[in-house]
Picture 1 (tube, one colour):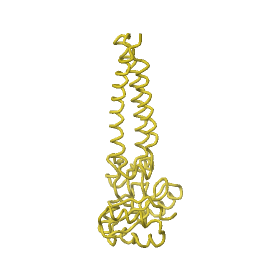
Picture 2 (tube, rainbow, N blue to C red):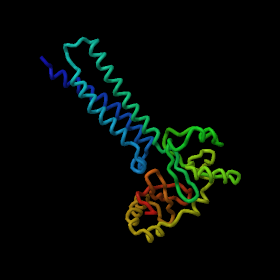
Picture 3 (tube, rainbow, N blue to C red):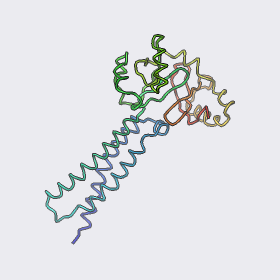
Picture 4 (cartoon, rainbow, N blue to C red):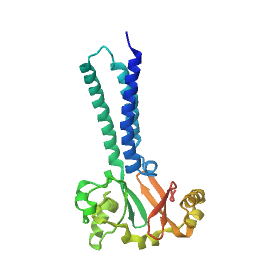
Length: 252
């Protein structure tokens, strides 16, 4: 006779363990790798959510099927070990895929910010970084940096860009953001200029400014390019850093 009470207890325990592991992975992804609003801006977490959803649904369901109080301890250990290995492998695969899409650098380049993901930079470019700080991709969230192409590299940079390997994907040109503050200030445009040209942006910009609590004349805006298109960054003119991200395409 099937002991449904024991089956449901085993299923509940299995679900709780699966939920704990999924929660740890989600905290890493959504709090560290994709701090707000990058999970909305560039996505990349859909596969992880699909894998976790399947893990949460299928794992405990498998527990409901395989648990039988008549089985020996050895049989139960073998059954649960197989299910556990399959679940962990699926979870690791999901995290691995997401890791490749995580934003690693927010790069100021000429007149805009670029969101660079781990997959945008190949190993050869990492090895060619002149500053050793940029020879490894960060794992603790995206970093703000800038691009500076020396005169001697201008021609190479142009040809590489035509082939799809743009300056913001090449760590050899990375420099600390502080070195480009003057250029950022010069390129940052007044918020009113965007509001006048694109009236639909006004409520979004007003809401962002209200949340910041900074005077509008201390702020400018620059476009932010990412793999899905463009957003708008509000820039603190004092240090050139983005202080807010607005889901509005200034070019649309």
